[in-house]
Length: 282
Image: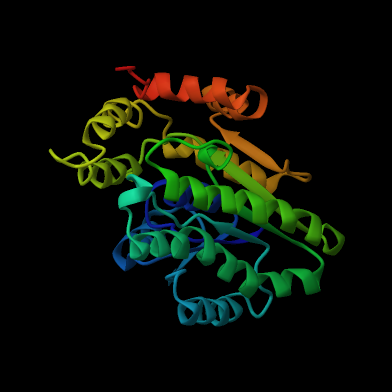
């Protein structure tokens, strides 16, 4: 069985994955910033779970986690690192502040990079290990008014592709998980972020309201976190994992195909149609 560390394990996909892995006999180190939520996982999960407070945006916190993992594992280190911590910043790029953009990239991009730089040397020296990065369908295409979030997931796709080939020689595998909409607290956070830009008089208010109408039914009717967790567990346990897992496969693989196979003008037209952003000529 594998020793697995999960970031952002206090809720949603991370929590569901921690519970499922522990139940299957893996040793899970669940990390996050919410101590109470992590402790609840440790109390209720069926299997071996330890918890660590970890803020992936803090180099000191990541360094402390590396030391703590060494102590927990008898200096044997990790078999699998799951970079799951992240959030979605929504809104027009024009009105998004530098501070908000930097915070989005700190959590979603530089955080996983810090974790990889911390734990990869041990995997490389042991000539085995697996890094699983949680990306998104929007790492392969881009949705309007989610530009900052789209950009972070595109970045994860890019550095994961580079790492996969850099590390193959050392027996370390890199896997991408690409969820579409998942019924977690993510949707509510996105709605609150969009509401700020939908106030009367805001430059994109009418367009934002159309996207919010599209979003309203998306997350409540989306797949449960356990669906994504099942794919992640498969990526942990597979003898030869695929480079990418789209979760759930349909309809999300069809959305990705828009960007892959259609001319840009055609894929733009489809996205504008489903989000209600079709141009109305004066």
